Structure formats: C-alpha cells, structure tokens
Image (cartoon, rainbow, N blue to C red; front, top):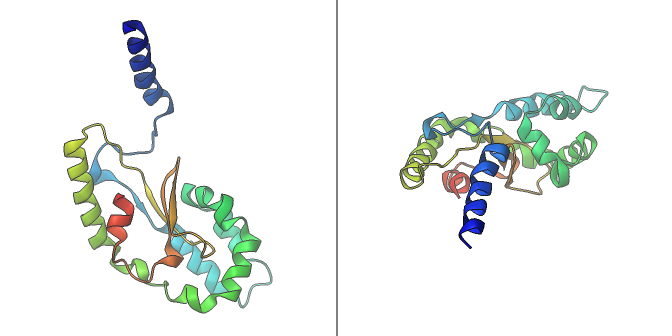
Length: 165
C-alpha cells in the first residue's frame, strides 16, 4: 500500500514537470494579456470590401497560439470566419473598441491571481488571448492558455471574473 502511494506521488510530481505548461507564468504579475490577434482581425475586417481574396487567411495563418487553439470547433477556417463576418458585420462592429479599457481589467485579474498565488503557491498563470471567432463561443481554455471570444464582448464588465474562473 505504501509503495503504491509513493509511486503515485512520484508520478504526479514528474508528470507536472514533463507535461506542465512552460509558457505559463509562475508570477501573477507576469501573466500575459495578448491582444495582437484583435488588431489583426480589424485589419482584415477593414480590407473586406476592397480585397479580392479572403482577408482572414492572414489573420488565421499569422495568428497567435490563441487563434490556433480557437480554430478547431470554433473558427474552423478562414472561409468559415469570412462568411460569418460578412453576414454579421454590424454585430462585429459593436466590439471594435471593446478592449480599449483592458489595462484596468488586467490590474484586477492580477490582484485575483495574486490572491490565488497566496493560497496555492504552485499556481501557474496562463496567457490570455483575445481573439475573434464566429459568434459561437465566449471563450475556452486550451493547452496554450485562456482564449476569449472577443466578438461576444459588448464591454469589459465581468471579464475579470470570466478570466479568473
């Protein structure tokens, strides 16, 4: 019985080292809030009318790990995203400037993360990616981090709790 407990404990400890997230921060003050995908989305969005090609191809190809994690079952591919954006253009416009006040929410999330670190000293803090999808998910977690479906946000009320949960 004792031997099983020792092996189980060793397995858990070593699996954390082998399979743990290397891009996750140990320090809550160093947690990453990644918004470059949002900027790239709006660049593609603004090219829609004059472009002869799908402008979201580049958004998908040059996207962060957040885009890669949000693609299966959510974005699907650039053509699928383009079709939804064309159909719901006005709905996307409502979220164009939603991330403008993010720095104040970052402070709140870091405070929550600091409290978590106090209670759980081994806690890790994943990157938070703000990406645009197809209005079918407010967000998810993936091996890359936390992914927020920014098009679903009309404001940043509640985003700190969403991230921290």
